[in-house]
Structures are given as C-alpha cells and as structure tokens.
Image (cartoon, rainbow over all chains, first blue to last red):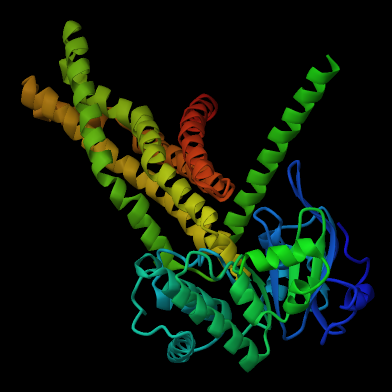
Length: 269
Length: 258
C-alpha cells in the first residue's frame, strides 16, 4: 500500500499514529523509494511503497517473512529493478542507471549480506583487500594497513589467512561488516545482521553498528527480525505489514494507537 | 488453437531471448578477456582446476579407448590380412574424431559441471551480488578466467587423450596381439597428416572449448539462487554441453571436413 506520493510528503507524512508528523533529519533524506512496485513472478511484494531514510540515521526495516524487507535493500543497491517507481540514492535514481552507472552509485554504498557473501575461495585478508586492489592505486603496504585497521575496528585479529568457512558465525559477520566498510561508504545496508547469532554476538554486532554510525555519521538501513536490538538502536523504524507499511520512531510506534503495530513490536520483545 | 499458437509464440520468444542473453554474455566475456586488467593468477588457478584435475580421467579414458580400438581393430583387420594398418586405424580414429569428441564429453561432465556448480553456488550465497556491491564486475573477476581456461585446456587435454589412446592401441596391438611395433608406428606416421588431421583436431577441440566454457559459465551465472537451482543448472550443463558438442562435431565435419 502506498504511504505517500512524493518526496516532500515523505518528509512530513504521518506514520505510526497521528502524533508523528515529522522526525529529525526528515528534510534530509539520503535514500527514498517512491511508489515502488515490485513482484516476483505472480507474487507481489511491494505495492506502490514510498518511504525515506534520513541521512546519518539508523533506520530499521521490520516485517514478517516475505514482506519485502530484503527486497528493499536489493532495490537500493540496484541489484534488482522495480516494475514501477523510483529508488533515489543520494540524489540519483538507480532504476534509470545502467550497470556501469550503478557501479558509480555503489561506491557510496556498503552492504552487509545475511550470509556474509564473502568469496569463499579467498582468505579474510584477500576478501578485504580485493576492492582496494581493484579500484585504487594504493601500494600493497597501504592496502595491508587499511585492511588491518578496519579488521581491528570490528574486533577481528589474527584471521588474515583464514578462509570464510573457517570463521564462526559472529566472526564471519564482523569480517563481512569490515568488507562493507573498507571503501568508506556513506550508506551502509545491513541484511539481517543478527540472524543466527548468540545473544553475546548480537550485542557485539549491535554495538559495532551503533559505534560506526556515531563515529562516521554513516546512514544505516538495517533489515532485522530482532525487535530488542531494533528498539535499542533504531532512530526510525519502517514496519512492513500485510497490506500497508508504517514508519516512525520505535518507541512512538510501540506506544501508538495502532494495535497491529504495537503487537508486532511487543511480541518480539 | 489460438492458445496453442500463443504458447508456441511464447516459447519461441523465450528461446530467442535466451539465445540473445547468451550472446550478450559471451560478448561480455570476450570484452573482459581482451581488456585490462589481466588476471594471470586467476587464469592459472582455473587452468589447474579445469586441466590438471581432469588429467586422471583423461589418461584413464584415453588408454581404455585406445585399447578397445586396438582390440576391435586388430580382429577386424586380421580378417582382411591388414593387421599392419592397425596404427593408422587407431591414429586416425582418435585424431580425427574420438579424441576431441570424447575429451569434450569428459570435460563437460567433470570440469563443465564443476564450473557451473561453483558459479551457481556463488550466486546462491550472494557472492556475486557482494562483488557487484563492491563495484566489481563478476564476469571479469569470476567468469572470464574460467571460460578462457576452458578454451585453452580443451586442446591440451585432447592431445593428452590422443597420446594415451595411441599408447593403449600399441599395448594391445603389439604387446597383447603380437603385432610389429615398427609397423604400428610407421602406419601412424604415413597415414596421419599434420595439417589436415592434427591441426584440424586441435581446432575442433578449441571450438568445443568455447562452447563448453560458454554453456558451463552461463548456466551457473543464470542459475536460480538456491540448491535446487544449482542442481538443475549443473544437470543442464552436462546435457546441453554434450548435445551441443555432438551437434557441433557433425557441423564442423560436414562443412569443413574438420
């Protein structure tokens, strides 16, 4: 179901109850979807969805399985194209770009995939060094420094020569996060960063994401099923329900008048 | 009736679209191969995976085919008192036909299916999407070294297959049946022409390498991102690869006498 019709409306529309008219930074949307319609074959996933994600904020997309959460991330990354509508990333409509044009937009993006998506025949070091070798003129020494710096930042040491298959779930997620950050993106997309992790690892990843957001001011769009971490870290929540989508600050949504929304957020606690 | 025509039209469009996509994919591989950056390490790694790891099966099958040819050929030629032509029979059969075709079928089954499965599993685990998000073209990094290695490997494995086959024929014809070793070798030398037979054989193998490499990489690259999709793509590579090799063999032989 459509939320709003244009970008100006996205910035001021009411979501999550009548009290939520605007939010901090809403005038400064970094990513927006406008009337996006997406279907896989006969199965419609997004029906004229419009929503926005503010610059420098952590936005979490919640919803049931198959509601289109990961689809939104893939649309933003230009990995799939909608049947209709626009996906504007940092001022550029990615639906109108060729694959070569998309490469330019993707230089501003980092993506943490659910399974890590690290190249399984490459070592941890080579996985992180690959984009630097391919796209910069950095010397091997500079590349090594940058790789080790980012690995240290995510709390991974002595793993240079390990293959992704030799890493634990939490470690794999942190290495994948390091790879997503290696090119210093301005927008970070995270697909289920907490799935399949133990509570300690979840808190660790959560702290990492919040820390990175605060330190570098990166716009973060996180797809998650994990309500507790969402309530702690999210500035905004986009909740995809069966026939509609609602948007707003997490606490306000949970305490709002919309029972379906409140139940979804409270049941996950 | 109208429905049947519509269905036929849809299927035709589907086939034409598929061929078009495959041609575009082949063009992107070609472009990746001829434009920098050159990736010698990736190419050598693929040569090892596709070539060296296929050696055992090629050597064993080459020997077996040569031995069977030696056995069957000796008994047949003996009836006409022409056992001294065994070398020519084994040599020409292997070089003109069996060498390139059987090698291509074996490589399709072993290396082609492995290539499809590897690329397909990279699709299923989002590794190729991960590369795209890093602004790295997966065709350049992953696909083109594999396709190029297949083109290089096929004639080399064919040559090894033929040498093993000739030795297998020698083992049976000379070692087992008591034929004359000098006559066996001389009959190969006199009957096999380097340009007409050996060069044509290697050319044929190169064409098979292009076809198998393209089919294996394309099937993997376009496989559905799940276990079932990878399995279906792998099966499709073996079936489609084998059929295309046999059809191309006929076309090459009929049109150019290769």
